[in-house]
Length: 175
Image (cartoon, rainbow, N blue to C red; front, side):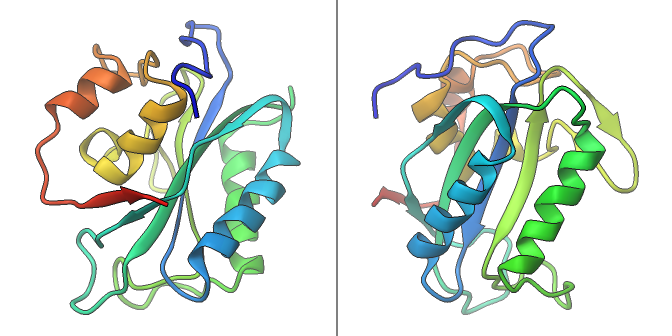
């Protein structure tokens, strides 16, 4: 996929960034199906990164490899971060996700709301932008593929600069 498919964000922008991950079942198939479902939540401008296989981060020992991706889109005008979070959590459940027993345990589908335009939140239910997105290779690499010139709310650097400066033990491979 060519770089810069998503143009730089402006302050008034309402584009949403969602990170997808799966490490149970058939992760590539799960993510493709989830992307199709997410596309239905978009009013316009839907763009998806490639699928990336990644090593688990902060997961229980023996956790399977993940497949990750990122999508970005403009939601419908009446959508809020909270209503979108509800939709993402319902979608996770449709794919067989159960309530967490162990932090970062294997799961068929994980959807994280990374950003909702320039919105910020810090509530028990939702933090925007996602507090660890800038620290996760498995988020930044696919996001860089579709939006290298995006600046996440609260950040001063482009996604491409955050990725270039990132130092982690994560291993990623484009599928």
